[in-house]
Amino acid sequence: MTGRPRTTSRTWFALVFLAVAAVASQVVAEGAIQRETVGPTVDWIQSPQLMRRLALSFDTLLADVYWIRSVQYYGDTKLSNEKKKEYDRLFPLLDMTTTLDPRFNIAYRFGAILLSEGYPNGAGNTKQAIALLEKAINEMPEKWQYLHDAGFVEYWWNKDPSAAAKWLLRAADVPGSPSWLRPVAAGMLAEGGDERTARALWTELEATAEHDWLRQAARRGLMQLDAEAVIAQLQPIVNKFHDTTGRFPASWQEMVGARLLPGIPLDPSGRWPYTLDPASGAIDVDRESPVFPLRRSGKMPTLAQ
Amino acid sequence: MRAISVVAFGVFRDSIRDRIAYGLVFFAVMLIAASILLAQLTAGQDVKIIKDLGLAASSVIGVFIAIFFGIGLVTKEVERRSIYSLLSKPVTRSQFVVGKYLGLALTLLINLAMMAVALYAVLAYFDWTATPGLRASWEAPALDPRMLTAFGLIGVELMLITATALFFSTFSSPFLSVALTAGVYVIGHFSEDLKHIDTIVKSPALAGVARGVYYIMPNLASLDIKSEVVHGQSVAALHMVSASATSGLFIALLVLGATIVFSRRDLK
Image 1: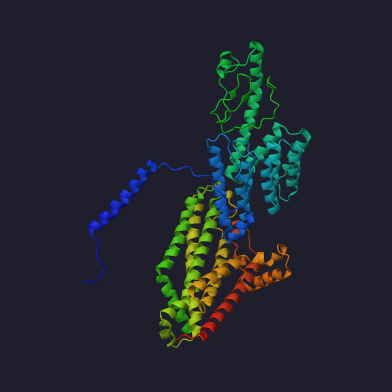
Image 2: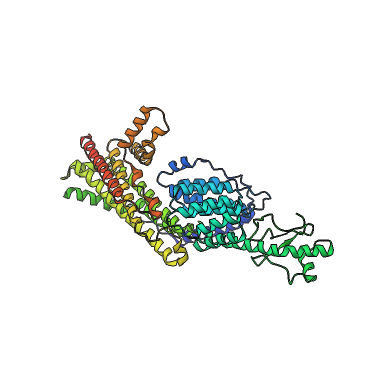
């Protein structure tokens, strides 16, 4: 007999059986196998310049990989149950991403937001955020958005209106930049920064952001401003309760019972009530709320201060 | 000319029957298609990543085929001793080498065209399903015709790598040919560092040698415009023409060198 041997029905049956058994075994084993905790990830190559050379002509693809790693690292850290969240690898990852692809727009803009965002929701490192944006400005001086973002970090997180105004005036000098930059900068210089200026900045960012993620960040900033405004209105009412009773209310229900409030106040996310500290009367947003943490100005009129 | 085209067509026919080449191109096409899934992980950088991955996959698979098939063009015929029957026909050794080169170059260009079509198909799907808001956030349109310029220069690079592999295979072993061609590929992408090495070394002699190597080796970095194209930047026509023309001269030099070496080679 010559020619190809025929595949019998038994062989086919065995093939299908083994395939099903292998997949089923994997599903069962998944629950049974207890994985050992893997140690911290090590970035074997830490020099972005060396990595850029090793990447040959595939540097932009490698930049994509590092961008995905940056986003995952941020997300994993933010959602982790660790008491002390470490964002220490975020800047090196973003630096690597933007060295491999120096025109990676979103890595600069969103990276700066992740770096400057208040701890524990972000790294809370405004120096690194500005350093990342300065890198973008050197690479693409024709884009006013990075100068605007640097001004924003100074204004919102560093609470330094004069430094912020300098960035915004530089942004206004870039050909093609929008006309609202100069008045906003002037407002910062004149008033030393107020809620209206911050709201104008967030609103413009929401309107002009070219990306959904940036728009969402702007919406969140506006919600934080709303929360601060509501807290500023609630605090005198809590203080009034203290003046009347000699103590702070134990809960919002007590305030509602005393007819000082019509209901339990919810933060702008609409899901979380504001927190009330019975010892000091301080009001804040819940740690689980998407608007946490607020950029507290320290000017809230609590009796504890 | 007829002899060259007969040899070239023979190579082309063998290449498209080759399961390994098929597999590689199929792998690249699958990789490009799978980039839709990968793009979901990338925080809004979907189109950029699909383009990056598509261009990189086309380039790396093409280089792989160019090196390993380029080296086998002459070596296999000699090892199988089929070269004797080929050269007993009215085909000179030079015609044989040039025909072999053109056959593989044609195969590579067709493979590259297939990968380009696959990438554009994936991007067309993405463009079709995208919302106007998402489209507005893209630095360049999904179906940006400028990507064809990147594919064009990848094609030139592949032809240059094929010529290099063919040249080395005419006088060295397959293993050494792979190593030497890979070396040219790597050095070709380091050319800017070689040119400016005087900024990091103090020795004028070493800087001079590095500068010499820069001019002797083909500058493959000048053929890499993937980043510019993905970010929607235009590449100057002068850059395209000068990089292609210089590469064309290197290709002619290497193929001529291969014909000279092969013509002098003792095949007994």
